[in-house]
Length: 573
Image 1 (cartoon, helix red, strand yellow):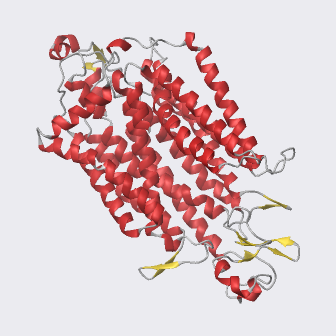
Image 2 (cartoon, rainbow, N blue to C red):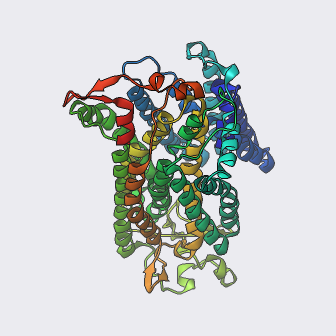
Image 3 (cartoon, rainbow, N blue to C red):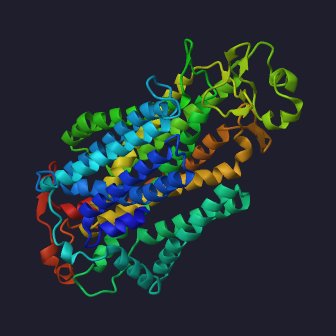
């Protein structure tokens, strides 16, 4: 749905009204979900309409547009591009603050942990709070609109998505590279359906198909757009020039390589950090915390890292005339998330060897009668995947966030290992550092290398390739390696003679890093980045006038030699 939102924003509708319309839809979706959660209503149909209907469309409409609209508010500054880069860091910082607050507060509201929440009303309170916040934000957005910089020339704004799609089809018939690029774009459809189907049906064959499509599609698009001399417009000048079409694709090789390295490693490792935390010791005195709350460390790490980078490290490097390049940030981000996975892998081996905090006399090899004393023999098949009965002699031994199963009034579940779950804050923290180095930088990278007319659409393309694709790939590997993801993480399966459990997913992330790090470096070095005019109103006559395009010569601060800033910048990228 991000592609739909980006396409709408880069038309005569404009970014302001796109955000506003989808924000209204977003607020409505959350409020519908809240009504569905009222105990006397409890409507599954309303819930699905609100969450999987309204919210899906609305979030797709807002996400690719709002950051672009925000960056567009920064104009006529002494260091325009650097300030926009800071904006993306600040924007991501606020997102992390919101995510941290939501993660700490909302699950406890929904599950009625906190006092003052009426029995059965937790989810309503959760959704109505979110809906009220979104409604207030939407009203505030429209009320403060006189302070926004108006979008110029909306009457002349072409439908960028339409013209780009026409250019892809046209170029696909004119050259081999164009044909490879067209084939790569077409593979989006089978990848979506194959990855969705294999996840829903738990189908291993379709999982293999999904992975193969992923590799072929990314390979085609990266190779084709590394040397994009084939993209050309099919429309008269004044719409989108061939140069602008090419510039809309020039960030794609970097986006795809970062997606296949950093974002995938980040997703596949973090996806299982919570599983790991939930089978570690969650006790603080007599209180057992929810293991998923440790993940908030990631949000705070991102916030801390962004402040340190923007306030201290980047300014210091700029004073030394050694600006940290996007390539360096991406590489260090991949390294950080890789080290995070290695730390989690070490923690898992330690956890697996630790003593299990279980009732006296319990062992994994004990009889079913010993593990589940109050469960009838006929129900053993339903509880066999769990470690034991939760409440024994009035004490609850089960983790509150690991898998559980109820047999009447009897709960069975997973016992914790005698190693503090707070150790998992370290891999979460390292992941946050990597995230600060990559996510806001990637969004700004796409923004700054795309013509103004197509920025919302390109940002939508970035969101799909760095958001949906890595998550879909995680589900693919979850299907392929499902035997290694047991309710009880101490149970393992054989791979090439090795007994592996959840750690197999960390090894997958490490393998992607080993292959992806050099690939990322090579692609970013080979990518040809043309300087982009921020006006977004270039036409063919201007593009043919080399004198009109020639930027003023500048001087190197160290050597005093004159050089062309745009072409030096392109070479450095």
